[in-house]
Every structure is written in C-alpha cells, then in structure tokens.
Image 1 (cartoon, rainbow, N blue to C red):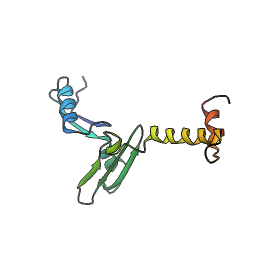
Image 2: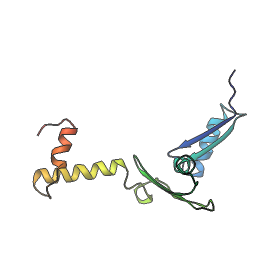
Image 3: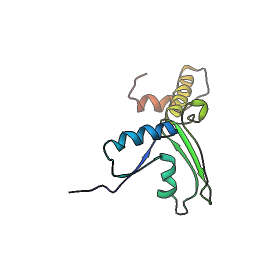
Image 4: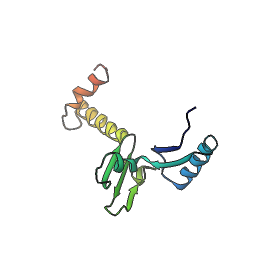
Amino acid sequence: MLEIACIYMVLAGADLESDFVLLNNGFKKYFQDVNLKIVNDCWIVFSAGSEKNWGAVSICGTSHNAAVKSIEGKKYGIRALRYILGNYGGGNHLSNIAMHYAFRSYEGTGTYTKLEEYLPELCKAGN
C-alpha cells in the first residue's frame, strides 16, 4: 500500500490567509495525518528555477503575479487579486490589446499593424 508522507501544493490563486485556511481545512478532511504545505505559485520558482534560491519572478498567465525573494530569504510579492492590485499584463490583457490594435488598423482609425493580417488568420476568421 502506498503511503503519502507529504503533500506540497503550489497553487495560483492561493494569495490570502483566508485562501490558505480554506484549502488546508479542505485537504485535511482527506489527508488528516499527512504533512501538508500550500504556497502561492510564485514561490516555487525560487526553488525550481533558481540555483541560488533568490531573485525576481513575473508570472503572466490569465492574470499577472510577481514576487521577489532576497538573498537573506525575505519575500515580497503582489497578489493578482484584481486589476488595481496587479493582474494587469496577463495573457487576457495582452490578447485584448492585440485585438484592439488589429481592429483599429483594419478599420483605418489607427496605425497599420500586421496584427490586422495575422489575427484573423490565426482565429480562422474571414474578412
């Protein structure tokens, strides 16, 4: 029989203390005797992607998260909770900007951009 000794979860969206309470309580129902650690996805980068275990990271997906870990191990970060709190610049934002400029170029109300040609082709949309 396989025994689980530790669960280490790295989750986008685990930002606030209330998130950690909810997640820990939920998982403890199923894994009472297992050592459980839940962290935000920003922090795994320093262990998995950095030989020195310090530096800066910018995660740009649906939203945007950023973190810095000093040489001394002090952590600083922004949480992607809402637009005003740091999620500007994610994949959704970048695609909205691309569509905006492609449309403006196509209708002649903005500067020409090759996005006008590439985006309809990528989206398999006709003119």
